[in-house]
Structure formats: C-alpha cells, structure tokens
Length: 197
Image 1: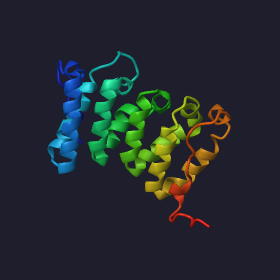
Image 2 (image 1 turned 45 degrees about the horizontal axis):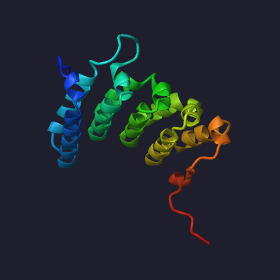
Image 3 (image 1 turned 120 degrees about the horizontal axis):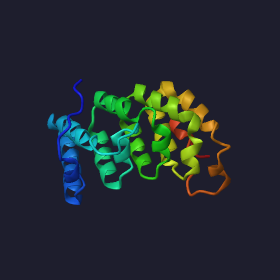
Image 4 (image 1 turned 90 degrees about the vertical axis):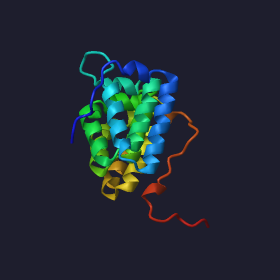
C-alpha cells in the first residue's frame, strides 16, 4: 500500500482548534457514510502530523499522540482507518514505543483507540510488546490501556489466554496497593453472563 503522504506547511493549520474540530467531524461523517474519501483524508492527516516532532529516534506521530490537540485528530483517524491502514500505522510509528505511549497521560488514549479497532495480528503484537510491562501504565493511573487490551482480546479469542496471563502477572504492581474507583470485569472472556442467584 502507498505510504502516508506529506504536505508542506500544513501541520500548523492542524493546530488551530476550529480546524481540528472540523476535521474530526469530517472523519466521523465520512466513516459513517463509508465514503472512499475517508481513507484519503486519514492518510493526508497522518502525513501532515508525521512532519512534526523532534529530530530523534522517536516517531513524529508518537510526539503528536502526546499533544492534546493532535492526539484527538489521530484518535479520530484511527477510528476511521481500515485494518491494513491501522497495521501500517502501527508498524511504521508505534511498534517499539508502546511502553512510553501507554504510560503517557495523553498518548495512552490513542493506544486505546488503536486497540478498539485493530486487527488480530496488531493486537497480538501489542500484547507481546506491552503485556510484560502492563504494571507501568497501571502504576501511573491509566487502567484504560489494560481494559482496552482485554476488550481487544475478547474480539480475538486466540489471544485470550495470553491476555489473561499478562493480567495475572500485574497483581504485584504498586497500583493495586491503593483503592481505585473501578473493578476489572473478567466477563469479557465468558460467552454468557453468569445468572444472578
């Protein structure tokens, strides 16, 4: 598939609040209408955001995920991408950076959106890279990453065993030493809810 295009002098435009909101709305409308223009807009946005960021080993799109305004655009794009585009986006920009993304207070939401829509092979790669380190985002107060990973495993039954093993390995994390206002529900791995007695 073709690489994400890049356009000069366009990243600054995406930083304007009105432009960001308009593009998020356009992505949502195009996704619901199943328009072919949706894929083109996603690629254009990622090409634009891929030009921002510092000149070091971290992908510019990882930097964009850490920015509150740009991250919302990337989340909207991930919700609209088809599986091949999500796979390319993950492997070109996120693979190898998941521990930092999952523990970042803003970027972790983008990882959650990826997991909500990713195909099985991408979820498997996320599980392999991030699973042994799930205690890190939990210790920083980001349980949504774990919940999204369990939800993705629910969609892909072959990954459920590994997901549960990773879940059981995080019981020693400092996160669990304090009370928190949520309880992880293991029901995603059950075919039917248990009847109330």
